[in-house]
Length: 415
Image (cartoon, rainbow, N blue to C red; front, side, top):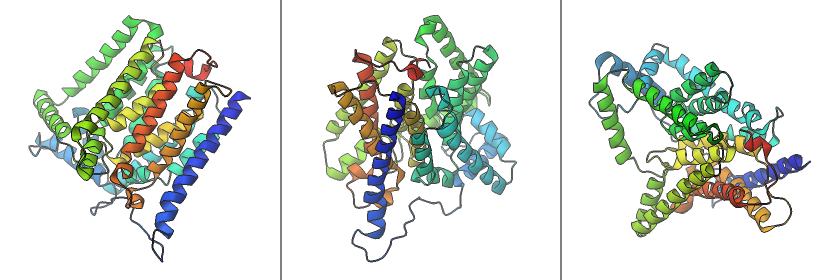
């Protein structure tokens, strides 16, 4: 009964959050906002060269790099395994490749939202919350942006979470398959690397965890030499330059981009914003440290969502087509979350307020920045809402870490 009430409460919280965002963002800026006629916005920054532009550029660049050697224009920031994979894909007709990319992305999106929650919540029933988030996310800005550019973020997300499922197997071959999928995800998109935390299992002993991480390191280092040491050197130099000199615009979700642009727009002291950013980062790190100190498994659903938010916020280049990761992650989160406190205690109220913050902030990210054109840059940038959601998730974690009157949460602790 408690589980049913939890899911009912979560669904109504999500519905309320989406309704408020839909009315105040989409409806207001489309039908009202001082206009006598409807506005039909182009809400995704489409490329003139056509749909799937990034995908086609990647295949062309990797093909030329594989045949002719390292490019000297400073744009080759693909790993050797990525180059080999996309060189293979370059043999496919571009139109067919675009259709295949779209189909794979949508399949990955649906699989994470609807099929994977059963491995965390212990039930094969589809959650109303997951179904609602998935349905509204199908028309979201982040998913359409990802499809328009031909990015493979949803694919990398599916590979990462499949790896986390397979690593629980008692069979060594199945676990190694999971490790292989995770390594592939890291070489497709660098951001899944933060999910290495999910493979930590404190109860297995420190030797097992060290051996597992050393295996990851050895495999990844070996794959970096697939095209030789010269290519590896050029790749690392280009990647370092890109990290140190990111492209700043309001569609860059990174904390670095947010603090730089807000500081410039308002003339605020950049050191103040930098200190606030560092305080957030230190709190984030301390939360993860204390999680493992208290013997939580790395694939606890709260830890994974916190890792996901870190993947969106901490890279200096983190464009808005990655927003679909938030949709996929929260579909998994709301399908699995169980309230730890009952009654009207301070902890119970705090927990519900934190969940409500997540439910109210997340839908804002479903709509393009063009509908927020009149908003201040502080609120216009989705980074602000990601930070609020991250603080809410950290609050939920700390409530469990320091609380004493917890209701056992078997689906989470049994991961």
